[in-house]
Length: 481
Image 1 (cartoon, helix red, strand yellow):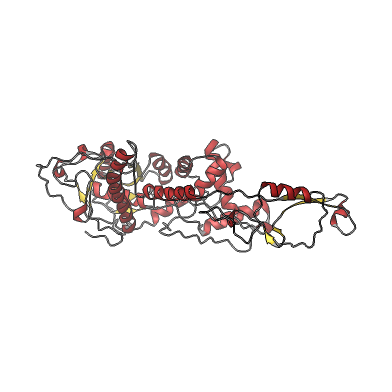
Image 2 (image 1 turned 90 degrees about the vertical axis):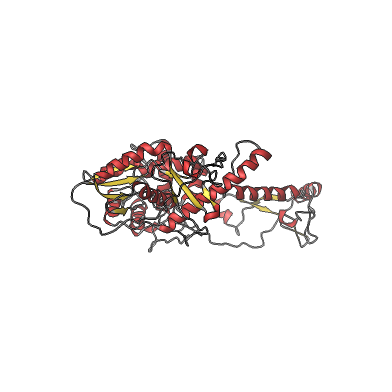
């Protein structure tokens, strides 16, 4: 079926029910061996979506089954829901495109597109198979589903999470009411609200994830072998890194063409002699300030922006000081007296930074904590799954009304009313193609816990990253400096 929400016309192909050979997800797709040309494919049933239902009466008896991605998340949520719920994890994605030739079902081994797992000539139709390492978990989920009265899909509310929920529906084929349960933090109140307010499956998010997955496969399978032959074995290419690499190469070529040029400037430290007309006289000590030479004989002294990148020549309207000229001029000026002809005061205000989104958290985690982007996300994942922060993959800098109140209340309690503006600060950062359902990354809960309150629960990288997030969130609602 056609999906109008994405640039690709994608139709899903399910593995026939008798097929048991399937594959796991892979970040860098590797080439599949060509399938045998004489094998005859069997028709596959078209996969159709079954959206989670709302308002359908649950059968009598049985507990509600809740499925999340990770065991840690499952354990945390189970503690909030009680005995009427069984919480189990899918352990990530349960289905993906075939990883290698052995994973291609026999029914498709004779097709020309088997090595890709994507039928390019038939609307970019993907072939999904259950990952070998997930078969046991899928069997467990099916067994739990038999005794369940309702199914709650509580995967993350982003592209990957929505896709996992869709694949679970396609694989488990539940005959009971299905609810899509979403939340941005793992707290008792958030989980209770998510259970009480389920929604439908977001088709657009599923389409977006599928489109990206297909593009990843097409890029990886077609471009990576070129790198192996022309550059180095085992290199990988992708829809994002390949484009980024081109940008880096283009910038490097500009740098290589750049013509260097030497130029000098003069900076001095000046001491204001104490006199009745200067403030320094009242202080009893002379004041000192620094200044740079910016003009000479009514012409501006050249800086880096005044040189042509291709020729290395300075503009004719500026004074180009070389080393001998600069040193000679500095020597002649060293013993001169200078007069301050005027002063100008400009007020300086610094607004607080907005709360963290994923990219800014990674940047600050690297700058202040010396953590790699992977380390930042790994630590943030643990903090999220254990209920300390909100979901860590977000493009938004917005805070909910509850979070705004919590941040302003904490700032007022810790620093006083004078440091909190009359109205909440609203940050309208909206990135193109942002997943706006999420808040910014902030401490979890309706009232934030200070780092001091968590000193016995968190340590090391977890404590330092939580402290960074807490400071940024509270500061975002404080007055200008």
